[in-house]
Length: 64
Image (cartoon, rainbow, N blue to C red; front, top):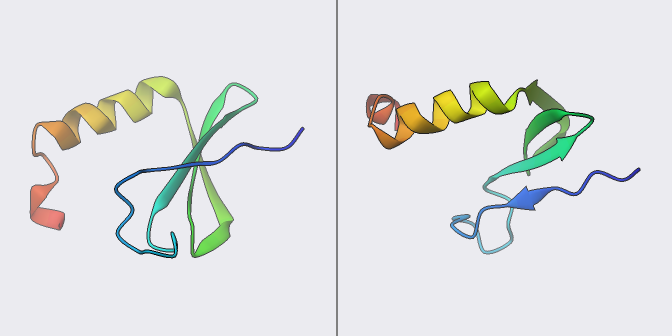
């Protein structure tokens, strides 16, 4: 089964090389950088939700 990667519509690079890609596969959420697709981070829906909620609240603004 081929993994269906999704890119954000807010990707900064016109070539699509400057973004994170997400996919769901085998009950896990997968993340990778488009310019280094061989490195894949695996996580759960709950952990991704906690991260996204924290990002929305500005918890990581000092890193950007």
